[in-house]
Every structure is written in structure tokens, then in C-alpha cells.
Length: 218
Image (cartoon, rainbow, N blue to C red; front, top):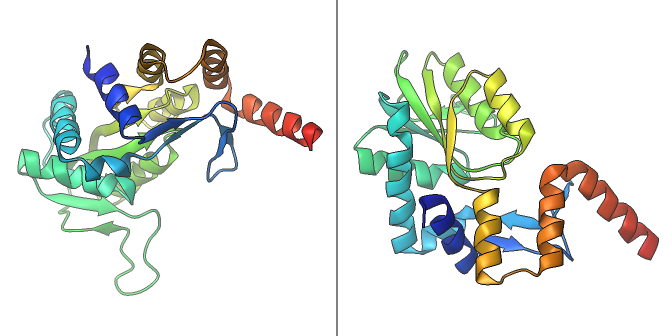
């Protein structure tokens, strides 16, 4: 079993990823989705935590050389620090926005100008949060070696955004591996699998369709 599928199995087992095609989750953006991913749960499982840290170390080999690891606040901080520990490199983290007091930092930690940095994110949906971190690092005089994530939904918008930002990226696991793992483990029925595939094709249209159906039932 490859790393992507193996990790997908593990994330399902610890319920870091939950699937609910019949009763979708609502993301912070308001989008309805049959999947919810919370990779913070990995931190409570030492064996899996180690598996992910080792996986990120291997994943970032293609982005080397780099001198600093940066975590994206907040969920990417812990995983970024674990990678920095594994590679014995300095660590910083990037806030979603600058502090409104003190030194008004957006980047926390020591980051001399000109350093080459790899960015760690727990989850990539549209890519917006980690690309904002990349922009902040570039504004601070750093060079972005790339973004490494634990999981990606594999949405076309994300790929386009990374390409436009001229930023390499990779993830340990992905939506296709998740579907394979969920089907193999019997987590979902055939009709639910079809729903999951339909969502991936056009999440926004699927969300609007679900909302309209719910309104009709109400």
C-alpha cells in the first residue's frame, strides 16, 4: 500500500477525516461538504504523528535545499515544528494576519532575510491560507522552496492558485486515495461513493444543490 492510501486509512481510523454524504458538514466559508478533515487529531496519536513527520521529511526532499521550516497558523504549526525537529532546522510560523499590538508580527520566530523556507500546512482546500503565508514570507525577504501538506482535496482551484503563485507543492495524501481507502474499508455505500465523487467534480455547485434540496424539504 502506498503512503497516500495508507495515511488515508489511518486518518479514517482515528476520525481525523469524517465522511457524511447524507448530512454534510458546513465549512468556515459556508460551503457544504460531505467530508471534514481535522489533522490536529494526529497529534494525539504518537505512532501516526511520527509517521506523518517522517512522511513530510521525505516529501520535502524534492524541495531541498531549504534552511528554515515555517508552519501555517494554526493547524500547520505543530506539524511544521515536528518536521523542523526531524530535520534539525530552525522553525517559524506565519499568522493569518499581523498582530494588532507589540511588534505587529505576522511571522513569529527568527527569520533572517534571504533564507530559503519550506512551508507546512495540515490541509489544502483552495490553497488560500498557505499561499498567503508564502506571500508573507516573500515580503519578509525569504524564498519559498515550496509547500508540504498532510492532505489535499485535490481541487482544481488549488492547483491553479499554486501555479499562478509559482510555488511548488505536494501532499502526503489526497482525495483519490481517501475514496479508495473508504471503499476498501466499507466506510461508505456505493451511492455515497457516487456522492463523494460528484462533490469533488464541483464542490460549489454540489453545495448549492444540497442547500436548495434542504430548503425544499424544510
